[in-house]
Amino acid sequence: MENVVVLIVGAGPAGLAIASCLSQFSIPYVIVDRESCSTSLWRYRTYDRLKLHLAKEFCELPHMSYPLDAPTYIPKTLFVKYLDDYVERFNIKPKYLTSVESSTFDNDEKCWSIVAHDMAKSTIVRFIAKFFVMASGENSAENIPMIPGLQSFPGDVIHSSSYKSGKSYSGMNVLVVGFGNSGMEIAYDLAIHIMTKELIRSGMTLARRLPLNLVDNLLVMAANLIFGDLSRYGIRRPKMGPMILKSETGRSAVIDVGTVGLIKKGIINVQGSTSKIMGDIVEFQCRNKISFDAIVIASGYKSTANIWLKVLDEAAARAAAIPIALEVAGAVTHIEAVILDLDYGGRDGHSMR
Image (spheres, rainbow, N blue to C red):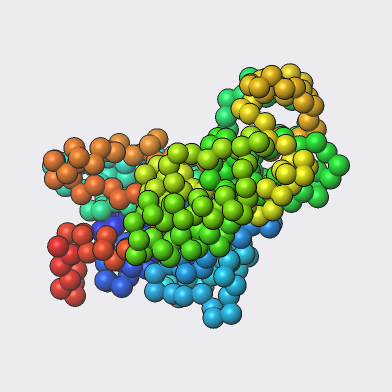
């Protein structure tokens, strides 16, 4: 049994940022991750050409900037190096190969009880924590849609997490399932916002001073000028603007990296939802039937926290005076504000409330 003040689950960017900020306040913590290294998603489950879709000023972790000569849009390899340097600078030492299996709050003892599996030693590890941070993100597990007949497909079927480059698919007719950023970059919800990186950067800058609905109006007008009417190609925009859509639903605008041009040229064809698969023939809801050589599933990921977290109702947790688990996913902002809300008195006299 290990007693800790704060237990952080996940050694990705969010978990590392939390760890560094806790260190600034001399708050002891333990960080665990089920993989054998930090930021495993970026290291091993991303394609070769990937760059951060947001400008670097929106993607820095707390207390450490990118090198002065870093490009505006950070490539995958540079981002991984930045994260490795971050771990070294703040002396973050995750317990790797440690997978959380359950977590419950003890209302009598006012603490979290967490059971984890040490995969290296094949043993069970138990933690008692005053505070519990879920930083395992929204990308813990592959999201594979249920498509009738998928198992009958004779060609390669991979998730985008296994895709590296198009070299091995040269000359093939490939179906990319999904129209998010991964789907757009590898080649696919038909109601989407397509933006350039520069538009998103401008929108995020304007959103600091202007109402989101006004920013959305400007972005949509600019996107219409750049791309024109895409509905003729099977792409329609949501009624909600891109910034408000992200704020209220978590859905991001799709960043164009040249895909729209290929769609207009007919090199990439946009189809509706997949209805069923019969051998190498894929039937879509629009009744079109097309033969494919390979399928890349680019429908994203899903969080696994609901499997092992037993308290998810924030209102009920607060009513019972439970120090609720803090879930951190994706971009990390205002971490110090979160840390300052912790009811912890450290040895150096910090009171967090």
